[in-house]
Length: 585
Image 1: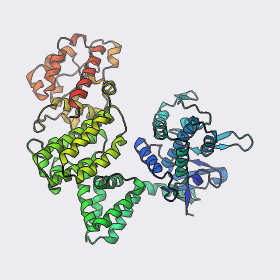
Image 2: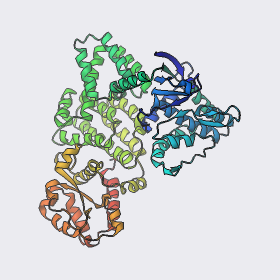
Image 3: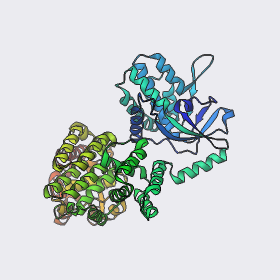
Image 4: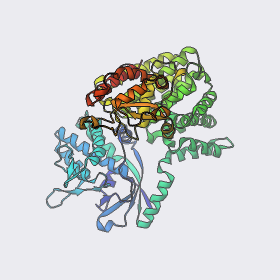
């Protein structure tokens, strides 16, 4: 029997049966990262001190068929409830640092059970996914000292630590400047957040609900509300077809698309407020106008994520700014920058880029078009440096982008707005030292082939007019395999003996080249000395101009090509990358 009721997080954690909450083995592994954690904690912070405006965290479904054994199984909500526990552990740490044992003890009672006789902790309240169980149970202990262990019961748990530690560290950093009063308000907002709690009592029903939810995609709640709102109020005759196109273009990321749509016009919005904000906007501009704007933005969103050169050209015509792609800044060159964001796995700049497109649709003067392309280059360079190489979270610029998107969307001085954003990006850029260290560690792997091709593509085309780029990069992995090859200068399987230290660096970027596939066939397993003679041929240099510089750089060094030379080249590539190729101008 399904029994939906409103319950606070405090009531969920200390449930009526005082039973352990168990993540069943059929559930997915814990997979939330920093992006989800950031949005989650920002939502809670926004409710601090607002008792009349509690945070809604969605639906939790629990299977109570084993409650007589002291267990309640999670059918839906395991990512959220695990993340809440990690956040509580961070709060417990802060309470200890602030010297308040009472708050720390009160938090501990939400993390572990308390033995009624001894008063000691007697096991975690949540039995989490096996993918993080050992490290989670360890940091739940009330006497945990804040250090993460690498082994448990004689086996390595580094993978578990790599899943949990970044989230814990992020949460602790986010609340590190709280005083005791702030911490109390934060905990009140967290404990007071509520869910719709659905209890079922049949395990077979739990499996059925779980499978149905995963097939459907439970993240579509806000999108479904918006669909109902549009259908109830729009006079558009083909709304069903229109909405189907929106969902298709969103490609299972409908909530992200709707969020970026809103941000591009009106600034930052939390996921929990998304539907209400879009509804208010629709009430303001009219439903049919909202439908038209959603349709245009969905076309942009699809082009950014999936579109080809023709799709990009068609969108620019739809958006009434075809001037963005011209003889100096071709659609192909612009698409190459868009493909870079796809390779990076970065979508945060989308609202800013769309706002810039809209600004150019109002005034596509030569100076504005030039400013547009300067902006796209700056965004690409920033995210390559900070997120791809230095592994910082993409969401660290989300609020900046939200503010700047409004400015770009509404400004009458587009060039000045672009300059302001670029200045802010420079302020947030990772240091030269951090970048050089991380870049020099980039290594070959099958997953890294697009990234390595991208790096050498940008090196090859540095300072060339965009219309004259010689492409060594394509986001499509199959295309790359057929057209380009990542070549190991010192071969992976050398014909003669090579020392172990050099072989341990064989995949380092300092030993790599990207060349056209047909050029690669003659290199094979040859030694560096033999390869440099082949690459000196003009036909090879013409296929990628950076090879001419490489030939000059290593000539005379090939007989002693070893670990030191590989690392020297890696550092040289890193220096050029930071100070020239990916410099934000």
